[in-house]
Image 1 (cartoon, rainbow, N blue to C red):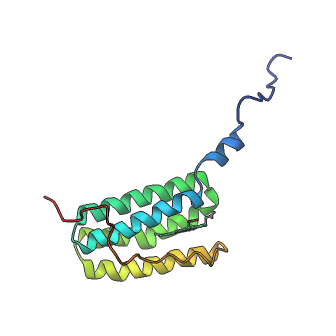
Image 2: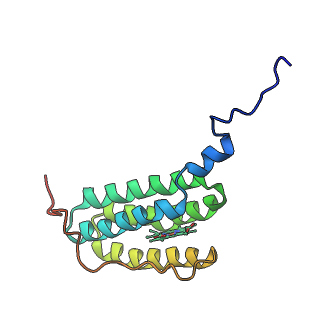
Length: 139
Ligand code: HEM
């Protein structure tokens, strides 16, 4: 009959395509990586690099909001209450303030893991700076 859509066995439907998009289990390891690098960049007083890491991290969280909308409110809460103050501390080149806010942000992230029934996911800051990056500030 004209206008009737038959399922095409060779094409994925929209539901299947959604499930192929990266959810938090795939995005979070990259989030953790950027968060770790941001700390050590700030410690090295490489303000632009630290801020860039956090802005990229924010993009990953917003991607997670699109692919997994059930996390949207919590991810926005973290962006507003934790990430944005951290970006402001970087803007002010205030490492002491950044350190305090960073500890609070780690606690907040782990609180979200508990809230989503993943109490075994406890993120912590790797003590050593990344071996693959020269964090010396540039002009
Ligand atoms: C900078 C902040 C954060 C860091 C460093 C972080 C880190 C991580 C890490 C390392 C994992 C485990 C990934 C793996 O399977 O190896 C994870 C999983 C997870 N995180 Fe985060 N996280 C952060 C913020 C948040 C926030 C704000 C939420 C709020 C919704 C959240 C919700 C989750 C959930 C639900 C999982 C489990 C995903 C799954 O297995 O489906 N995280 N996180």
